[in-house]
Length: 354
Picture 1 (cartoon, one colour):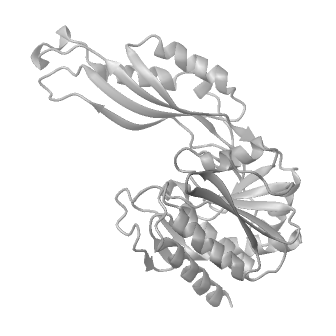
Picture 2 (cartoon, helix red, strand yellow):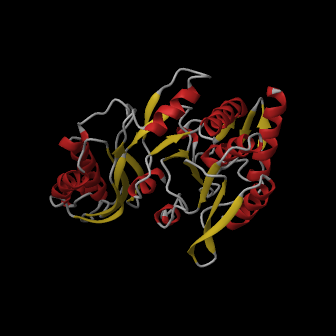
């Protein structure tokens, strides 16, 4: 039976991966999902987000909880099997394999083998501006939600906020042989980043986020080692962990920015969140996980649509198969055995709440 289930999940996943859905191009995949869900006796509803783009909502019965995930992916970004998936030794390599089409395949397999009440939301634009979940309107009053994202099958009951900045440092050019007569913008950026990591708000740790740190995602500056660089552009992501006030953290960063010859633009500015393990949706999902493995609680270090669900008054957790570190990379892949376990957990969760 498990072998058949694994083959079924693999086939669902290959179908999903064969329909590219980079942000802005989600509708073909959503239309396929609508057709599949109709065969599973779901009612469906399109929720317009912007011109010719919409979220897809689906439900059957009188659901207590919502299961949600996004359907868009990042671009290929060098993935050798981006839209032509490769299966090797129970692993599937493709763009979106874990973020989040593997999660969707496990969910579709779970709902196909139950007839319990269920509500689903397939959301657009998570990888870009997150307008899908921002404009999401719950069709019912839900007691909680599971947002499917890769968490290594750990139960994420908290999420880090962040301040993402685009910086432009301004220096003064000079011949590289007399570098002291110039002002090197690259050196300025390095000095800034060193002081940034020493800020008080970044010394606060949280047990659910052991790997959290500032990420320098992009740096560009200079023309030649015989010329002092007069400009340097940097893009950074600053984590804001639960327990840290977002506005207070920003004031620390702003004070530092004001001490450098730099112009800046805020790309994202999101608070953290954390919910209690005693929340009903957490306890019931944990009970289902415990059937298959010890329950491990974790924090989600990246922004997810759960943030907007919480803002709408829906207690949400983040849960799914696969390692988040692989998402967006040329190595993105998912283990079919993990997806099988995820599917069983979701099936038990649906039965528990029928």
